[in-house]
Length: 67
Image (cartoon, rainbow, N blue to C red; front, side, top):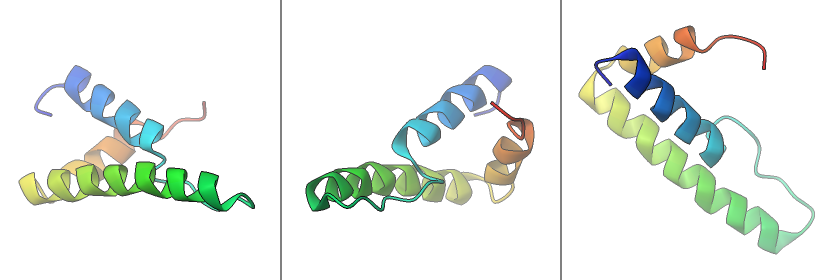
């Protein structure tokens, strides 16, 4: 996380995990699956914040663009 390419990778992982999106789905099995993915994303966010309190904010700021 000390360089831009490492932070981009982590940001992509957080996106893949759905850390910032809803897990709601009318199919309860799908919602459980999405919830598990999101749980991993939240775990990564907690680890990042524990390592450096400002790092998660830095990731968000660096990736604040429309895709």
